[in-house]
Image (tube, rainbow over all chains, first blue to last red):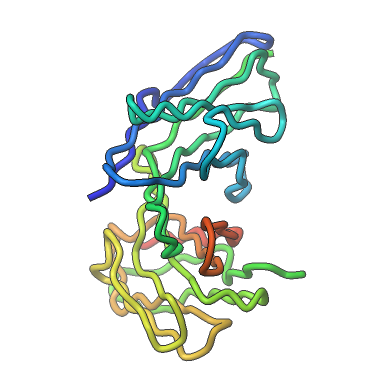
Length: 114
Length: 113
């Protein structure tokens, strides 16, 4: 069965610090990978996604993620965080056969101090 | 466009009560799914549907029923609510073909006392 593991459950950073959130998945076949963000009191929003092609994908708000197939990883990065990035971040995976189902990681709460 | 609409936004139930969480989408999406979000556990799939009349279980289906009589609607029923079902529930929809792109509703916060 597919699973997703996010290593950091709670991250606290100061503004302008760099961010990297880890995500590993377990699935041997072709996968689609996602990062979602949930700002306080809001619903999930898609940050970025990887389907195929360039393993370095860029998303909204300056976020990017790198798919490393050999490591089954899809880590999220941002060079300089802002207070407004305070949110919960979820990594998710689905197999390439589209069934509309996502498997989510446990989530990482990011707190950015001004 | 309304997208995915969930009602109610908040609900408090007593143990043993029943209720239905509503989910409707106006994008003619064939795929719909229900997730629950709990602290430290991310989102877990409860039930999903790949079209009208077709439903299947996800990771955590116990205590929940679904049906899909129309493409637009995918209600989630709690027949006898339990405190363990206190959670935030999200409905999502997407289209088949190509990589998946899920649209999420704004969620229903449910408390079972």
